[in-house]
Image (cartoon, rainbow, N blue to C red; front, side):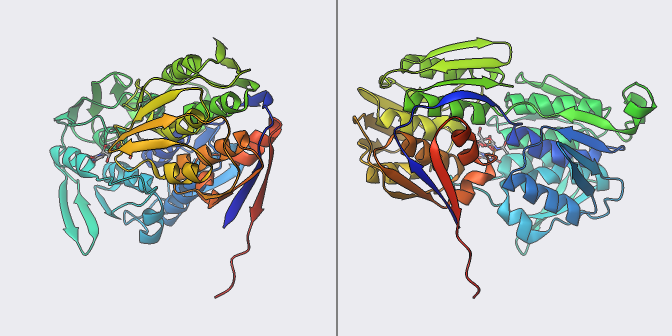
Length: 435
Ligand code: UD1
């Protein structure tokens, strides 16, 4: 059990580098199983979810090691296709392993994945897509048993542009004989990063970033191997894209404290929708190259409407942080959560801090108050926990965010990032008592 203890009232200021994206790193780690050569991954964030994914890979025979800032992976000795059950339950992204395992071994066995409690998160789109590639899927005693020894390319139209399903199908399809076309594919930047990585491994994948992705599949990839000197041929090097949600969270932290912050290693195009809403709230934002500067000198203004949508719409992963921002805005704001049905758990905690809002189904109407009051609150999920920390930065007195280990799933020590910008924040890790 960890807690973040925040003393509110200090405007943030300073410069901070944005870390690599969790949601890009996780599928890339899974895709490393498809590499015939060792992989050197740069900017892979050291997060709890990454640690769990590495433990899963380790259990399947993958060797990995951190070499300062670089994560080295050698999947040549991978020898198992049965996912460790306990670890899979910890991490929803363990479902990404299905595609690569099928591509590598022709078989995969996993359990229903775990992850943040943000609503019912089915995997029907993943399984339907794999079925269309010719994978035989059975469910037995809570296990999903997949047989993909004769996968063939297919035209797959997703009912919804699911990020995970798009990635899983891409990874399986690289070894499905013939061409696979995914229509209504998710368009998130992390999918483009996965495509870049798969192409470095020598696979034919095109179209990521648009709604139609084409994969030219088949056994073996040596023919397409990238060119270069012996050193480059030894190892596939890849740098993970910057985390747009970490960037957005830090911008919100500046906005809620009336601060002035500069982000470097950011991709402004990836957070255009977030920057638009921050401008609507009165912040001045300038973006140039990979640098974003935000200045927020006054109380935030109301934001008329935020509707979460698949990319390039407003990200659901930024909804909670904007919820916190709107609680102290001058005026009434509205948020509609379209992506996940149960993603307002931070609301009840914000109420305890003096926020004022009403909820009907997936819509929240927030009447901004002049000041929140610090108190003891509980993080219920990753982004909700980050939002409560931001609320604490703006609150009068001390806020204690319990269950902070949930925040570690997506931020490399959010407390340290905020402290480096002048926030008065510390972390306490309670010892768990022996039973
Ligand atoms: C990914 C991100 C997560 C983000 C989400 C939406 C990773 C590791 N996680 O999650 O941070 O919040 O995208 O941007 O990249 N759905 C189905 N059936 C399926 C799959 C999904 O009904 O088989 C539904 C989900 O319940 C949800 C919606 O589709 O309502 C979006 O889910 P999806 O895009 O798949 O999100 P994830 O890949 O789980």
